[in-house]
Length: 212
Image (cartoon, rainbow, N blue to C red; front, side, top):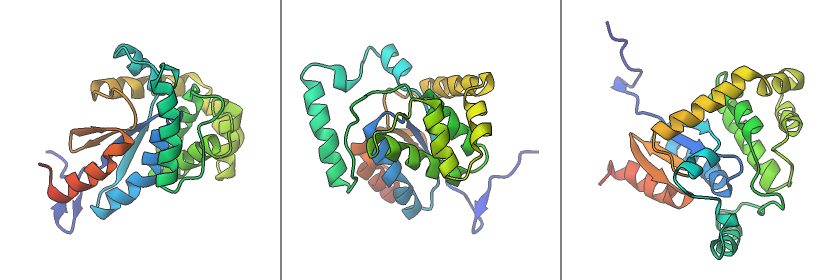
């Protein structure tokens, strides 16, 4: 017999918003800071999925904006303009982009225990990178951030450098590929894809109107 869907006041619970992000993406940070509030206005939750967007960009023939002639200068200007618009104090780090595999593995390690704890961890990692210029590409730095949130440092560090969690991240990237992720942030709303932090207001409107 099929297991009935969870209910809210006798009605089926709406699907969470699936949020794909990479910790090296400044636009992902903007989305991480704003998306939960948007979701809560519509009685939704956010299902975060940390990935490495690099392999997906290579598959689509793309490369980081910061490395592209002409676009790179615009990108750097736009990032800091967007930070100011949304009240975020930060800047594009001197070392950019980074390989954020360790940070992403840590997110899934925590998320398997608590979605809220994973959200707080994600915000702490983003802020450490874009506000404090910390090297979140280093597993030891990521472990320090997790420890600051109350997670046991040694166990956390051992896990995020282990083969099972490396495999888990590989599987998450494969999931993203199957979901059509071509860049980050990438949000699925009942199967409808939205790419980019500039689509957050559109997501809000889509949820309000039930699509169009």
